[in-house]
Image (cartoon, rainbow, N blue to C red; front, side):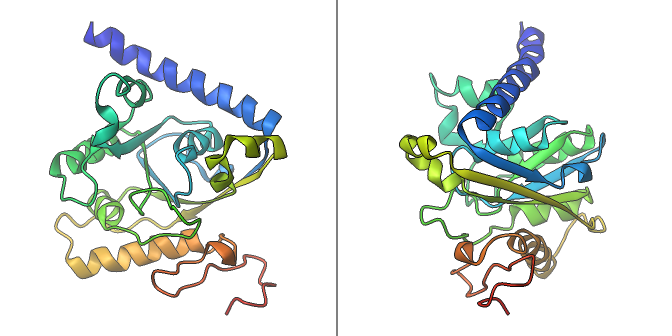
Length: 231
């Protein structure tokens, strides 16, 4: 029975992912840049900013070629609705806490050559501005040494109101590779902070200024360099 369930999870994921791709083409104006940077195999960490509850499936639809495994807050796994994230292949994590079990599960996923997707902010933004990152993503990146793809998502904050679908919101996902970190089994707090700054700077680099990080005073950059408010 357990094996049947395990086999059914990828089927649910791929069905939902390709249905969503079709919906996005019909009801939205969405653009994906940098998909060619996704390696065809091997452990991989995909990180992104987080504007909407729709970001995980949209990120999966943007990557397209490989199945993503997501950490999701443990509250989502309560029955009866808990069957949804499990069917999608997500696994629970205690947010804002040192959840060793989730950390080890993430590392096992990477060792099996799968793709781990993470949102360093830990929760979706309520303001449309980028939030403060938490160290879990950098810790896993340092301990595993896995390659990293940084994603910048814009436009999904409009999906908070379903009526906005009538306006065909413009959604973009921009991907860029980040040089992997040398594996460190027991990274120091400073190493984790430095790694998180590098990862988050890569996400910020392709976000318009209006999404800028108010929590530090750092502004998001204009990749074309023509934004008069950027440094």
